[in-house]
Length: 106
Image (cartoon, rainbow, N blue to C red; front, side, top):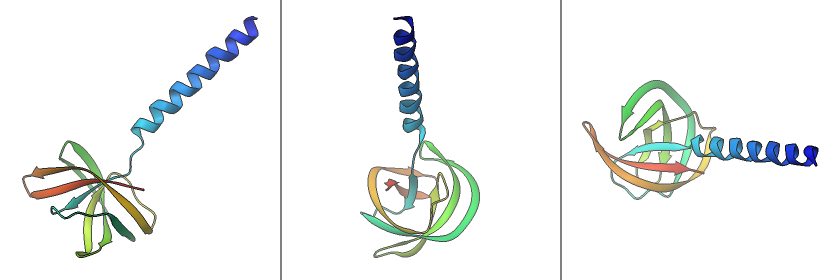
Protein backbone atom coordinates (compact mmCIF):
# COMPACT_ATOMS: atom_id res chain seq x y z
CA UNK A 1 0.00 0.00 0.00
CA UNK A 2 2.79 2.42 0.92
CA UNK A 3 4.59 1.64 -2.35
CA UNK A 4 1.43 2.37 -4.35
CA UNK A 5 0.95 5.70 -2.56
CA UNK A 6 4.57 6.72 -3.24
CA UNK A 7 4.10 5.87 -6.93
CA UNK A 8 0.98 8.05 -7.12
CA UNK A 9 2.75 10.98 -5.41
CA UNK A 10 5.76 10.62 -7.73
CA UNK A 11 3.48 10.57 -10.80
CA UNK A 12 1.71 13.74 -9.64
CA UNK A 13 5.03 15.53 -9.15
CA UNK A 14 6.23 14.51 -12.63
CA UNK A 15 2.97 15.69 -14.21
CA UNK A 16 3.17 19.02 -12.35
CA UNK A 17 6.74 19.59 -13.52
CA UNK A 18 5.75 18.78 -17.12
CA UNK A 19 2.81 21.21 -16.96
CA UNK A 20 4.97 24.02 -15.58
CA UNK A 21 7.64 23.42 -18.21
CA UNK A 22 5.09 23.61 -21.01
CA UNK A 23 3.73 26.95 -19.88
CA UNK A 24 7.20 28.51 -19.96
CA UNK A 25 8.14 27.10 -23.36
CA UNK A 26 7.27 29.57 -26.07
CA UNK A 27 7.78 30.25 -29.73
CA UNK A 28 7.08 33.97 -29.59
CA UNK A 29 8.04 36.40 -32.31
CA UNK A 30 7.37 40.12 -32.59
CA UNK A 31 6.65 41.01 -36.20
CA UNK A 32 6.87 44.71 -37.14
CA UNK A 33 3.77 46.36 -38.59
CA UNK A 34 0.08 45.61 -38.27
CA UNK A 35 -0.24 43.06 -41.08
CA UNK A 36 -2.25 39.85 -40.77
CA UNK A 37 0.51 37.24 -40.91
CA UNK A 38 -0.46 33.57 -41.05
CA UNK A 39 2.80 32.00 -42.19
CA UNK A 40 6.51 32.77 -42.28
CA UNK A 41 9.62 31.16 -43.72
CA UNK A 42 12.48 31.39 -41.23
CA UNK A 43 16.01 31.88 -42.59
CA UNK A 44 19.34 31.02 -40.93
CA UNK A 45 20.28 34.72 -40.59
CA UNK A 46 20.27 35.67 -36.90
CA UNK A 47 21.60 38.42 -34.59
CA UNK A 48 21.83 38.38 -30.80
CA UNK A 49 20.00 41.23 -29.03
CA UNK A 50 18.43 41.87 -25.65
CA UNK A 51 15.24 43.85 -26.11
CA UNK A 52 12.49 44.33 -23.55
CA UNK A 53 9.38 45.60 -25.30
CA UNK A 54 5.65 44.84 -25.56
CA UNK A 55 5.66 43.06 -22.17
CA UNK A 56 8.31 40.56 -23.26
CA UNK A 57 12.04 40.11 -23.61
CA UNK A 58 13.49 39.08 -26.95
CA UNK A 59 17.02 37.73 -27.26
CA UNK A 60 17.42 37.42 -31.02
CA UNK A 61 16.50 39.02 -34.30
CA UNK A 62 16.05 36.47 -37.05
CA UNK A 63 15.33 37.17 -40.68
CA UNK A 64 12.03 35.73 -41.84
CA UNK A 65 10.35 35.92 -45.22
CA UNK A 66 6.76 37.08 -44.76
CA UNK A 67 4.31 36.89 -47.68
CA UNK A 68 3.52 40.41 -48.89
CA UNK A 69 6.43 41.92 -46.93
CA UNK A 70 9.52 40.01 -48.11
CA UNK A 71 12.52 39.47 -45.83
CA UNK A 72 12.04 41.12 -42.42
CA UNK A 73 14.15 41.13 -39.23
CA UNK A 74 11.84 39.78 -36.51
CA UNK A 75 12.42 39.89 -32.73
CA UNK A 76 12.39 36.32 -31.32
CA UNK A 77 12.61 34.73 -27.88
CA UNK A 78 14.66 31.82 -29.25
CA UNK A 79 16.58 30.74 -32.34
CA UNK A 80 14.31 29.01 -34.86
CA UNK A 81 15.43 26.32 -37.28
CA UNK A 82 15.09 27.48 -40.91
CA UNK A 83 11.89 26.47 -42.66
CA UNK A 84 8.17 27.24 -42.90
CA UNK A 85 6.08 27.94 -39.80
CA UNK A 86 2.43 28.70 -39.14
CA UNK A 87 2.01 32.06 -37.38
CA UNK A 88 -0.74 32.26 -34.76
CA UNK A 89 -1.65 35.88 -33.86
CA UNK A 90 -1.75 36.60 -30.13
CA UNK A 91 -1.95 40.37 -29.72
CA UNK A 92 -0.90 43.73 -31.11
CA UNK A 93 1.24 46.18 -29.23
CA UNK A 94 2.91 49.54 -29.64
CA UNK A 95 6.37 50.40 -28.40
CA UNK A 96 8.48 53.53 -28.74
CA UNK A 97 9.70 52.38 -32.17
CA UNK A 98 6.40 51.32 -33.76
CA UNK A 99 3.58 48.81 -33.93
CA UNK A 100 4.09 45.05 -33.63
CA UNK A 101 2.15 41.81 -33.85
CA UNK A 102 3.02 39.20 -31.22
CA UNK A 103 2.82 35.79 -32.89
CA UNK A 104 3.28 32.17 -31.82
CA UNK A 105 5.14 30.10 -34.44
CA UNK A 106 4.31 26.42 -34.88
